[in-house]
Image 1 (cartoon, rainbow, N blue to C red):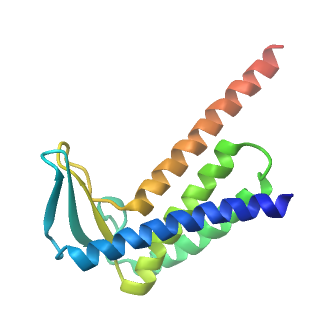
Image 2 (cartoon, rainbow, N blue to C red):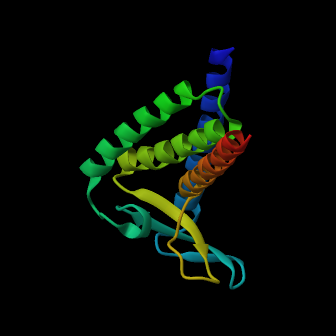
Length: 160
């Protein structure tokens, strides 16, 4: 049963990576670099940029750093996914999304030397992002929910 669950979580991660790579392909083939296409006026646009850094373009151009950190992150996430496979769906789904986001951007860095970003919020100044970044965010939120619920459960157990 454990292998089936691992397969399902890896399949979830692979599906998100597929969507990430597909949206990046569509962006590169249909939008010129730096071009912005309004989707919802003054709310949301598609803007193709090449990001050689991390969030907010920090550590720009430090590819070897990203390669090392990503390799370590993937190993750690897979280890925790295997170790806590039966603990909580919040945790395991969160880890799957973190894995997908990590791999999605890693594929770009290896293949292109930069990450393709395209989603831009026009109503607030926020860095342009992609599906992999969204996946990482969803994963972290799921893990935080797991931590909050786990702490709540621990407190209830202590008070009984």
